[in-house]
Length: 322
Image 1 (cartoon, one colour):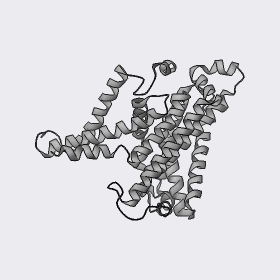
Image 2: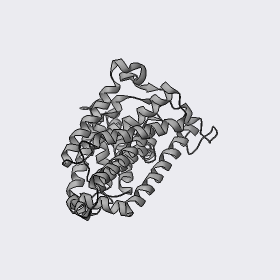
Image 3: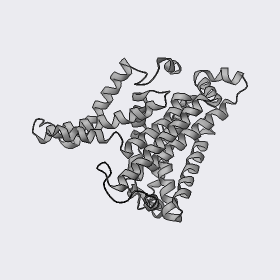
Image 4: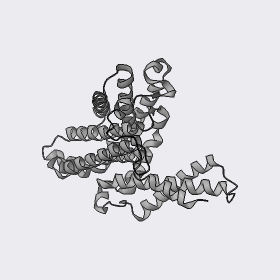
């Protein structure tokens, strides 16, 4: 078993585009749940709206990259409004029910056979990333062991993570962010001070949804294809795992949590596959090993919640609202 290759592959996941996408989406959940107390179980739906909004506008209408980006962001904001208007005046569990159902509705809509010409149905859409890579300023060659396309998407993805983390950090240090934290702790007290709690919640839902849409685009661009199977309910739970690993009400927590999540997944997969190929483990095949690694991550998450529930960078004071 080549441990050097296994550890190198796991380390490569730290700055992969997928990790950047998970970091952005988990940061959106931090805005929703960590800072606002909004229990959103449909972040995968926001990612799907962003990815499909960009892909459809590019392939069907032939819009340039930045207009497609604007359409994806606008679509996610509209999606957040549709979810928030009927639920944000109610208890938090209503939002949880609506968001998890809405994410599944989005996934089933794009797989409808009648929309195959637009959404690609179960096969999804492909070949929409040309406008993005046309902006690549890096000439062909090797960059830290990557070709110019891989290096470019990493630069853009992690640059976006840095920008969004900075914006969220500034927002949460502002009076707006302090009101949001107050709503998380006791929205009735904030309402008694004359603040429009409903409006603040809606703004937080839209901002976190936009982060999810950007994550959906970063998630799908390296693949050159968007497929509905990638946006199932389990994706949202993976994002919550990243959030809990790093810390709920933190800015860097979701980023570190995403890195830990993907490094652990890659490491466990590499070790299990190596043990199977070497004959050390005979009672597992590679398919079962792929499922076992998620079980191991789940066990690790349970241990984390028992011994350090605030996450790696979290503060126990931030758990008071939970």
